[in-house]
Image (cartoon, rainbow, N blue to C red; front, side):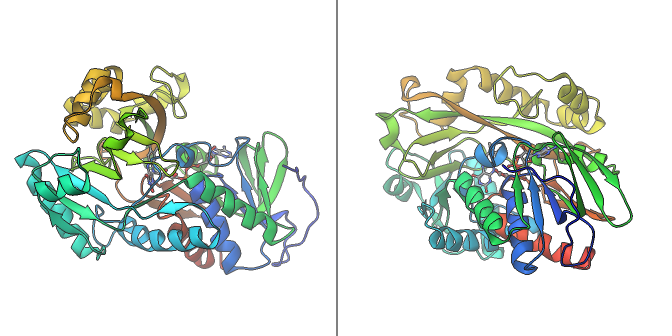
Length: 418
Ligand SMILES: Cc1cc2nc3c(=O)[nH]c(=O)nc-3n(C[C@H](O)[C@H](O)[C@H](O)COP(=O)(O)OP(=O)(O)OC[C@H]3O[C@@H](n4cnc5c(N)ncnc54)[C@H](O)[C@@H]3O)c2cc1C
């Protein structure tokens, strides 16, 4: 991408800056925010700084590719509101820009009596969140929808879908870049610091420096560090949780038609290992949720001293470990044992065999954890001075991205007085 040095450009607001808005992070949240601000404020010069060579390299490019319905989330929460709205907008966006997607529906399956209460709670949530068409199904209908799956009760969620979120991110970048000469998508530009001035912030990258009037931090796994560089001391810490996937072999692919989910553990914001037909036709099984010693570590034994130290020196991490050591240990052992991982998958598809699955990819979630050890469930967005910091944007932030973009635009319009 073309590099731009400090110049004497004049934005629509008359400031002596390169950009009106500098967005840190070229994942789907940063790009959707930049896109919505661009639509809301035509003529504004926007830069997206991305440290990697390619956009969507981290969470956005390593997820399950599911367009979530919004039925899990606490009624009234930002997640609930933006997921349902964002899903509809995402589908319209995909249609308009010819991005392949499919609304194939999913089932959530209880395999044990102890899960029935959780299933009922999800059903009630779905009703409160007004998710279209969700209905209870019994064992026979589970078998009719997914012939290899067995369970004692379930929910059918017809409005869930699949898409490749990297394609969405790349399209957003293209639209931002082509909307005006003043907009730039600056890949291979790692933001390493900020210098505050009266009328602007100097954004220091590992290649050069730029002046931006306002900063929006959407740095995903690095968002707490970017916030600190901007003088904000967040009360949360990003704790990385790796999710490993297996893939069904081509021969076993027919055992899954669409999407099959378990009833999730209500103590965690993770959905439990599930089967996902991807938009390219392959079927992924996973992800688990394992504490990772490296923020951008996709291998099982990846380690980074700084990342590990920052996670383990945070009191909230230890409180989380002590509270949930049994769950954590289970996830850890399954991460290293194909046999145990398979056993978990067999709860949903009992006929699955070891040679039906092969190791697949992995993703790392940026999960914000509070000082008291609680994983923060909802999106967290902080405004400070000339900056907005997105400090927690876990799943379903990809589904919700366009609605999150609207929300950031609203906050920016008010907070920055655009
Ligand atoms: C395993 C897994 C499965 C998931 N499944 C789903 C799903 O099916 N559906 C769904 O809706 N959501 C899902 N999610 C959640 C979703 O992927 C994320 O919530 C979403 O992608 C977050 O987007 P983001 O832009 O905030 O973060 P990211 O995509 O991580 O983007 C942040 C970007 O900031 C860049 N960056 C960091 N530091 C700097 C710096 N100093 N300078 C410049 N750039 C920087 C990074 O390189 C990165 O590209 C899943 C997540 C994971 C990990």
